Structures are given as structure tokens and as C-alpha cells.
Image 1: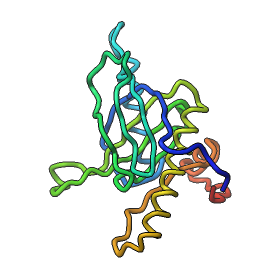
Image 2: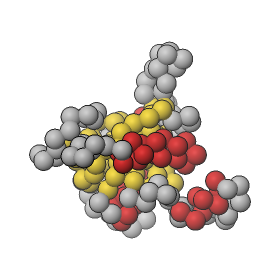
Image 3: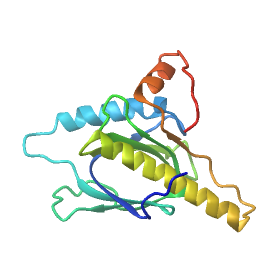
Amino acid sequence: MASHDPFPRTFVAKYLGRRDARGLWGIKHTRQPVDDMVAEARALKPGATLPFLKLQVSPEGVTVSEMPQNTNPNFEAGLFPIDSISYGVQDLVYTRVFAMIYVRDSTNVFENHPFECHAFVCDSRQNARALTLALASAFQEFSKAVKEQGCDKKPRKFAIDLRSAEEIQADLDGNPADHSEA
């Protein structure tokens, strides 16, 4: 694998929000939540803004903090630990959107739904893709560190979807294309 920029990698994005996800990974579990969040964002009153945030991606996870110009306090700041993120993808309909499924520790999954889809709007499709790739690299680094430590505890499984929008759409339509691993 080619060398990448050092961690942490920093991105600026607007926070669409969070919704329950119905599963651990797969675009089928981020599609509806992203559609709902985009519809809600489009329905904002004139002058209302989405939270303007800084995302730092590292092998520890994704750290969310506000940009100095942010005027909307409706977001969850802090670290989303890498071993609690199960999936990350650049959305295929809204290609400037990066979505991730976060698994919240929950003692009672019937009262507190454990899977959360968090979505962020980047300033370009390229930056949404770069954010997805940075998380993939962070997962690789994290996995390598876990293996080197020889931990008995197996890390949670995770997935980053690096397929093209066409391949993802074919899969959603039930026409599996050739899915060569990235």
C-alpha cells in the first residue's frame, strides 16, 4: 500500500445529524437515515445552519470538534473510538456525504438502539472520498497495532465501502457486480 499523509488527517464538514441504523454495516443501513437527514436539512428555516465541524481521523477514531465559525451547538463532540465504528461510506446518491455507523455501548439494546448512522456533508465529492479513505487507513493501522500487541481480545469487525457508486447501486438493485476487494 502506498504511503499516505500522517495521522491525524483533518477534514471540515457540516453535520447532517444522526439516526438509528438497522444494522452493523452495509449501505442498505445508511441509505434511509441519510435520505431522512438530507430531507430535514433541506427543510431548515432560512438562516438556520448545520453545525460546522472539524473531523480528525486517526487510528484512535474520529474526533469531532466545532470550527470557530460554528453557530449551531446541535452535535456530539468528542472521540468516536475506532473500535466502535463498524462502517464508513461515501453516499452514492449524495456524493458529498460521508456516513458512518457507530455502535454505542448499550446494556439494554431494547431501550437504547446500539447502531447510529452519523452523516457529514463535505465541501466536495473528492473530500467525502478522502474522508472515507482516511478512515479505511485508520482501520488498517488500528488492526495492525492490535495484531502486533497480540491481544487475546478480538477487535470488532468493521467495513469501509470503497466500491464505485455504480457497483453499490448494482448490489442494492440485486445485481451483484464483480466485487473485487480494494
